[in-house]
Image (cartoon, rainbow over all chains, first blue to last red; front, side, top):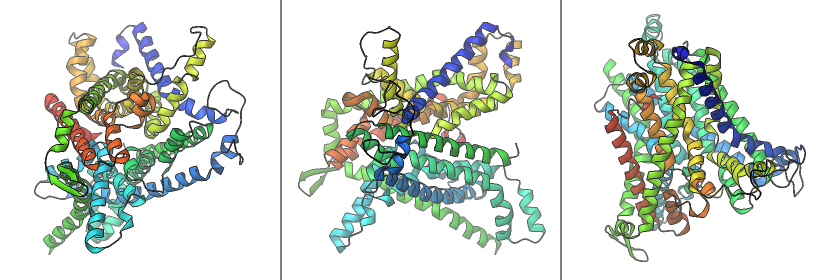
Length: 286
Length: 288
């Protein structure tokens, strides 16, 4: 409350600015979500009455999102990719956390910087570099050994690799921050009571890390789900949802079914983000 | 025995780290550098050389687009800091205990909404038949529908919007750790509001500021959807050139060159920013 001594008019102006900012923050999201409920063929004013057709109707021209095969397939692929990326990146994030908090080895600082780097590489470049490498390997094997390796061609596996490559940095940082707060005496106590190293890890250390691992997993899933730039270059025939939506916007133009998808994604990702915050806060102990 | 176990566990922990960085970051980047140094002289015949880079320099459209992307990204970063800092300061230092948590949540929840949905929302608001144009006609301020899309100002607003939360969230975390007593001491010693801001608050928040700026700059320079969707055909964003070379023209050599140039350019800006502010990557980005 350091500014409480300053004059009131200034504070009111400041408050108005903050309110204006949050309106700015909400406006496009509200617009994207609200038109899902407008009973019209176009996501535009005038308001023609409330409808849930863009979610549940099963006939053209108002095909609802839950009957739109391609959107549902996109949602399905996004969920699969997100789950795999999330699991992989939490695993490597956890081993990275132990490596950098507990390990002592030459060049540790250098490797730590290397670990952060993927976060400051533009996503487009991660996409093309992994595409180029996978294609090089695939072409080399095909030319020299006559082997056809389809999984090295654009598709789900490459999308997973592309997203995993930078999301791991995020999960590593989240889990490292938590492991740094760990009180070593808890492990020592367990060891003194006769527990083996594996038992200590399983019953003391990992439970301590669990909130951070869950939060990191959720964030990884969300980042994977909304990723576009890296995915764009690596996608095969199994398009995740953001790519499907983009194609729809570019080819068909915007229809309210995209608003319905937006509504579901905004609410879904908001809830997941909320869970990740709550999980971390509840058990962090301050 | 004990030290053997230690060494073994160190190797086991190092293995996933090394595999991840080597296979997905280091080798692929060496790959695009190698590809960018390959000139096509006939179908399936290649030669080592700097031809792709020379093409880039000789074609003003290419390097103008890179400079335009870079300068607009710096502008967006600056605007995000200018608009975001007061918000972060309000959340961390002025809001009451209750509303602080609520406001911070309001920032965290939309953080991971896709760029696509954000841009889509702006399109619905700003296009000729959009909400803003309709509203202005309704109030009688304008008589004809106005197209607000497809110009640089809209692109900049859209980009600032897309990235600003990545500025605010690290700033709130940093400012949260600053004691109110530091600010009060500044006032008690006779500093004006501006002096306190410049001499106490900003230096304290510097790691958060630099961290926010780096992330925001990288996200902006590497963004694709927002400039394309809000800027339309003449958005001239560099990532679009990379996409065109790779996907439209199948000219991977030139695409790899552009990619490497973008990476070099953004790394240079980030490095300069770190040097000028005396920060390091480890105490900024890693902390947020």
